[in-house]
Image 1 (tube, protein in one colour):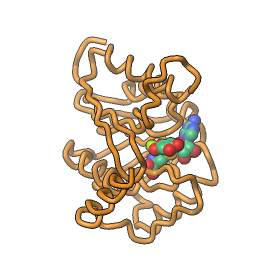
Image 2: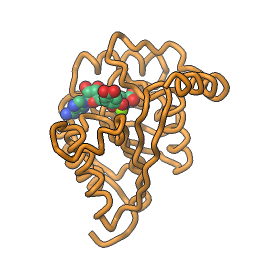
Image 3: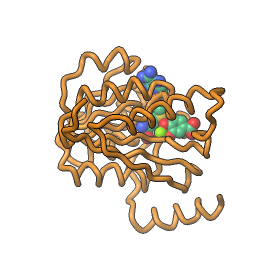
Length: 209
Ligand code: SAH
Ligand code: DHB
Ligand code: MG
């Protein structure tokens, strides 16, 4: 664990310029790491994203990395106080005009959106990941990239017994991804400053629903 954190710092120092003026504002430390934020930015550039949808803004850390790709970002956050912190971080980053922050439970704001988005980052409450996958597909086109955070959670994903609603949401999400002919997907386990976790990376194709 210590080694992971040290290596994370070593790699970040070399490859990731810290976001200037970002203020975590006393929010829970649940944002992606610097290396992961830059991964999101590079993925957006690799798929040529012009429009991005993010579920789960927190203080806007991942939002800023996504918007630094040059795309427009719609980001959904249920907590008004977190959204206020995000708004000021996004403004300080000079990205206010690129980011559309919608406050409210994602299942209330998703029906108001118009797709398709080029990249969708699912990183809100994990118990709702199955519903979020349905919405992501509805708001996708062929070629949309879907990225989901926290699919490993220190191995909690293996807990099939059902005590942890987040683990159950992630497991159901993985089963849905695997079963959907429109999706080609993989998962990437990660270690680093946030411990042991992972992403799902999926590409929407033209498969029959
Ligand atoms: N993407 C952020 C981290 C998000 S943490 C980053 O990497 O910087 C998860 C966020 O989802 C929290 O801010 C939490 O308030 C929000 N959230 C939880 N339930 C939600 C819901 N139903 N709708 C929208 N956001 C929700
Ligand atoms: C936690 C981590 C996350 O990346 C997230 O999106 C939500 C919660 C956590 O460590 O609890
Ligand atoms: Mg996350």
